[in-house]
Image (cartoon, rainbow, N blue to C red; front, side, top):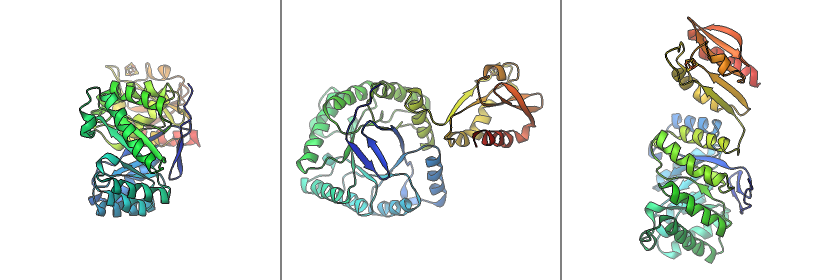
Length: 350
Ligand code: SF4
C-alpha cells in the first residue's frame, strides 16, 4: 500500500500527514462544566491505552478556561471543537490549544473567519475543517448526492482558507452513510493535499458502529488514504480508541500492542472468559509491546487452540491455569486469577 504524501500538519507534539503514522483519536463525551479529578484520571488512562489526540466540545468561555487547565496536565494534543462563536475559538487559540475544529461556514461574517485564521496563523495552531453531511450549509445540503455535497462544501472552505493564505489544516468529510463517506474522501484525496481525518459520523452503538466504521475506514486506509481516524460510537471513548487501534492493526498499519485471542465460550466452559476479559481490558490495551494473549474457556481445547499465544489463561476444576506457548506454566486459585495473570504478563513483556 502506498501512503499519500500530503502536507504535514503539526498538532502539538504530533505530526499528521506526510505519509506518516496514522493516529487514533476520540472525543470527550461529558460536559466540561462538571470536570473532576476522576475525569482527568480517565483522560490519562485513555492516553495510556493508545489515544493520540483528544477533542472536546467547547460551547462557551467557561469551557475554554477549563480546557486550558486540563492541557497543563495532559501530554497528548488536545483539540477544541467550536461552532458559531468565533470568540471562543480566539480564546482557545490564546490559550495555546493544539488544534481547533471549526467550520468557517458556520462562524458567520467573513471578518470573524479572518480573525480566527489570523490568530491561528500567528500562533501556528492548525485547524480541522470538519464537514459533516448532516450539517452542511443550505447551498450544499440541497445537493442530493451527499458525497458530492461534502466535496463542494470542502472546496468552498478551502477557497476561504486560501484567500487568507491559510493552509495549516486537516480536513474531514463524514457521513453516517459509509458509502458516501468513502466516495467523498476518495475524491478529496485525489484533488487536494491536505491530510484527512477519517470517520463515519454517528456510526451507531458498539457492534453496528464498529462494523460500519471498519468497512468504510479499511477501504480507504488500504488504499493509503487517511492520516488520523476516529471511530464514532455510542459507547465510551476507550472503546473508540480500542476500535481505532484494532482497525489500524487489521489494515496492517500498526503492529504495536496486544493481540487478544479469546474463546466465545460454549457448554464445555469452566471459566468465564467474558468477565475475565472485562476485568483486564484496560491493562491489556496499555501494553505497547507485541504480545499475543489467550483467554480460553476450558482446558480441553483452550491451550491447544491458543498454542501460539505468548501467555494464556483458562479454568480447570476449581483452579485457573496460566499457560505459556500452549504449555501449562502455573496453577492459581480462582480469586487470584487476574492478579497472577497480570504478574506473569508483566514479567513477560518487561
Ligand atoms: S475453548 Fe473450550 S469453552 Fe471455549 S469454545 Fe472452545 S471448547 Fe468451548
